[in-house]
Length: 255
Image 1 (cartoon, helix red, strand yellow):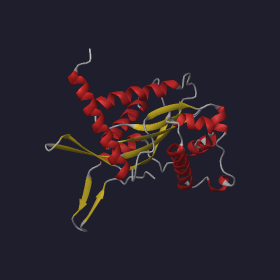
Image 2 (cartoon, one colour):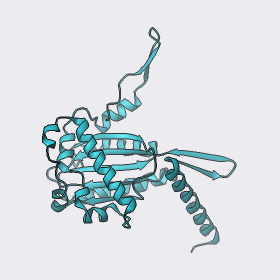
Image 3 (cartoon, one colour):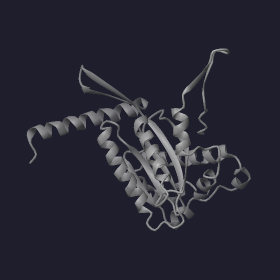
Image 4 (cartoon, helix red, strand yellow):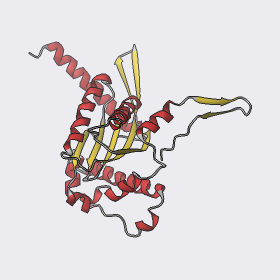
């Protein structure tokens, strides 16, 4: 039975989330008053881009999407104000995952990916690489989190640009190609009346990031694995008193 208190709490929660979205649209930083005048919580929006290679014997590619749906639900209960948005594209051979939320949520996603890769049997991904984890300068690219399993027609609709073969040795060029494709998708999402990216991709498969680009990036040592990224993130600072310099024991290599 829905009581008046529950309805009031629901309306209050909706207002707070609307305020978060408005703040994010202005400066990429979500700020809200949980209890006006007493507690103020500031959430800085970040975007994580991860790629991975599927096992050769994967039978049902929707299992990966279902796994992240469960993970996002668990994280939403632990971080009630850190709304998760993004897109998981599941190709025939690899995946591209873009997640937008707070740093704590994104680190939890990386830890889950690290733990699943350490499993000896039944790993959802054979290989994974962190392409980028950075602050979002403006607004979110996605309104919600969703995933889409791509078929052969989607992949065929995203060919590698002519002349790209000569530049494929450059990791920077590959990353720029990926980022450019995501920016084009974001532009279409802002002007489209369709709320889910999957529906937009159905009508414009040329917006899909090339699976060839993802496959080549997965072989690049410049991009760290989730485990290495977390190790570098948690590494202590080394302070050199002789030279007055302060350096991390390892430098982040994420492009």
